[in-house]
Length: 128
Image (cartoon, rainbow, N blue to C red; front, side, top):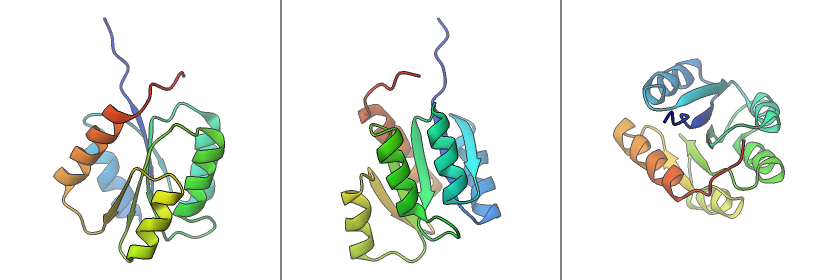
Protein backbone atom coordinates (compact mmCIF):
# COMPACT_ATOMS: atom_id res chain seq x y z
CA UNK A 1 0.00 0.00 0.00
CA UNK A 2 1.27 3.45 -0.91
CA UNK A 3 1.88 5.79 2.03
CA UNK A 4 1.85 9.50 1.20
CA UNK A 5 4.89 11.45 2.27
CA UNK A 6 4.40 14.18 4.84
CA UNK A 7 4.45 17.76 3.56
CA UNK A 8 6.82 20.17 5.31
CA UNK A 9 6.55 23.91 4.74
CA UNK A 10 9.99 25.55 5.03
CA UNK A 11 9.83 29.32 5.64
CA UNK A 12 13.00 31.42 5.57
CA UNK A 13 13.89 34.67 3.83
CA UNK A 14 17.51 33.55 3.40
CA UNK A 15 17.70 31.75 0.06
CA UNK A 16 20.67 29.60 1.10
CA UNK A 17 18.98 28.37 4.28
CA UNK A 18 15.69 27.71 2.47
CA UNK A 19 17.44 25.74 -0.28
CA UNK A 20 19.61 23.78 2.16
CA UNK A 21 16.61 22.82 4.28
CA UNK A 22 14.58 21.93 1.19
CA UNK A 23 17.38 19.71 -0.10
CA UNK A 24 18.06 18.10 3.27
CA UNK A 25 14.43 17.45 4.18
CA UNK A 26 13.39 16.59 0.61
CA UNK A 27 14.95 13.18 1.05
CA UNK A 28 12.20 12.22 3.53
CA UNK A 29 9.36 14.68 2.97
CA UNK A 30 7.58 16.62 0.26
CA UNK A 31 8.80 20.19 0.65
CA UNK A 32 6.96 23.43 0.02
CA UNK A 33 9.10 26.53 0.47
CA UNK A 34 8.14 30.13 1.23
CA UNK A 35 10.41 33.17 1.28
CA UNK A 36 8.45 35.09 3.92
CA UNK A 37 5.55 34.86 6.32
CA UNK A 38 2.92 36.20 3.93
CA UNK A 39 3.76 33.57 1.34
CA UNK A 40 3.73 30.95 4.10
CA UNK A 41 0.34 32.10 5.41
CA UNK A 42 -1.12 31.75 1.91
CA UNK A 43 0.34 28.26 1.59
CA UNK A 44 -0.99 27.28 5.01
CA UNK A 45 -4.44 28.56 4.04
CA UNK A 46 -4.34 26.30 0.96
CA UNK A 47 -4.04 23.29 3.30
CA UNK A 48 -2.17 20.02 3.01
CA UNK A 49 0.76 21.02 5.25
CA UNK A 50 1.79 18.50 7.92
CA UNK A 51 4.55 20.56 9.59
CA UNK A 52 5.85 24.13 9.43
CA UNK A 53 9.54 24.95 9.92
CA UNK A 54 9.87 28.73 10.13
CA UNK A 55 12.47 31.38 10.78
CA UNK A 56 11.46 34.15 13.19
CA UNK A 57 12.90 37.31 11.65
CA UNK A 58 11.63 37.91 8.11
CA UNK A 59 10.30 40.89 6.17
CA UNK A 60 6.55 41.51 5.74
CA UNK A 61 5.39 38.84 8.19
CA UNK A 62 7.70 37.11 10.65
CA UNK A 63 7.67 33.68 12.18
CA UNK A 64 5.23 34.61 14.94
CA UNK A 65 2.80 35.70 12.23
CA UNK A 66 3.30 32.31 10.58
CA UNK A 67 2.44 30.65 13.90
CA UNK A 68 -0.74 32.76 14.11
CA UNK A 69 -1.71 31.80 10.55
CA UNK A 70 -1.16 28.12 11.31
CA UNK A 71 -3.09 28.32 14.57
CA UNK A 72 -6.09 29.99 12.95
CA UNK A 73 -6.15 27.94 9.73
CA UNK A 74 -4.67 24.56 10.64
CA UNK A 75 -4.64 24.50 14.45
CA UNK A 76 -3.33 20.95 14.76
CA UNK A 77 -0.38 21.52 12.43
CA UNK A 78 2.85 21.46 14.42
CA UNK A 79 5.55 24.09 13.90
CA UNK A 80 9.25 24.27 14.62
CA UNK A 81 10.66 27.77 15.01
CA UNK A 82 14.30 28.58 14.25
CA UNK A 83 16.31 31.76 14.63
CA UNK A 84 19.83 33.07 14.67
CA UNK A 85 19.00 35.68 17.30
CA UNK A 86 17.05 33.80 19.93
CA UNK A 87 16.37 34.65 23.52
CA UNK A 88 14.63 32.77 26.30
CA UNK A 89 11.70 35.18 25.99
CA UNK A 90 11.45 34.48 22.26
CA UNK A 91 11.44 30.73 22.88
CA UNK A 92 8.72 31.09 25.50
CA UNK A 93 6.64 33.26 23.16
CA UNK A 94 7.02 30.71 20.35
CA UNK A 95 5.86 27.87 22.59
CA UNK A 96 2.92 29.93 23.88
CA UNK A 97 1.90 30.57 20.29
CA UNK A 98 1.88 26.85 19.56
CA UNK A 99 5.39 26.01 18.41
CA UNK A 100 6.38 22.41 19.04
CA UNK A 101 10.08 23.21 19.21
CA UNK A 102 12.58 26.08 19.06
CA UNK A 103 16.04 25.83 17.51
CA UNK A 104 18.92 28.29 17.43
CA UNK A 105 20.84 28.72 14.17
CA UNK A 106 23.26 27.35 13.34
CA UNK A 107 21.94 23.93 14.25
CA UNK A 108 23.05 20.44 13.42
CA UNK A 109 21.06 19.08 10.47
CA UNK A 110 20.78 15.71 12.22
CA UNK A 111 19.19 17.40 15.26
CA UNK A 112 16.62 19.14 13.05
CA UNK A 113 15.81 15.89 11.25
CA UNK A 114 15.32 14.11 14.59
CA UNK A 115 13.11 16.90 15.94
CA UNK A 116 10.98 16.85 12.79
CA UNK A 117 10.57 13.09 12.98
CA UNK A 118 9.63 13.27 16.69
CA UNK A 119 7.22 16.16 16.12
CA UNK A 120 5.45 14.44 13.24
CA UNK A 121 5.21 11.17 15.18
CA UNK A 122 3.52 13.00 18.08
CA UNK A 123 1.21 15.08 15.88
CA UNK A 124 -2.43 14.14 15.34
CA UNK A 125 -3.36 12.80 11.93
CA UNK A 126 -4.58 15.68 9.77
CA UNK A 127 -7.24 14.97 7.15
CA UNK A 128 -6.21 16.32 3.79
